Image (spheres, helix red, strand yellow):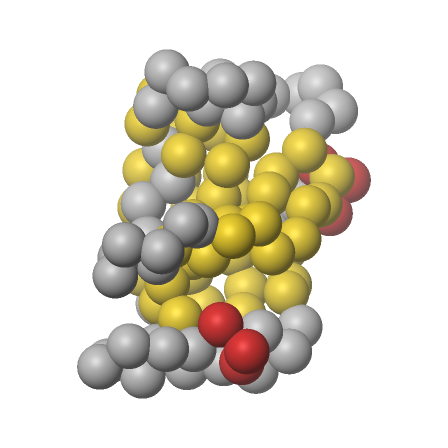
Length: 102
């Protein structure tokens, strides 16, 4: 398990980004904690630290909170650490933290 906080990237409508969670593949769970009570979306993105562009993986609605389960993500495993690196993007300015479970 790992925990990270959200920060304002100042980029686009999904400007709030979490820190990085790592997975060995298979199923991966991200539990998002927010003070928001309105409907919003959360998007899992693959972080590629080797200079390749980050890729969107899957989007989910706040109806699925607090824990979002992403299935069969082994295709994103790469690099010398043999792990996939992910983060959550969201327009939710009240998102506080995410806990990652591999």
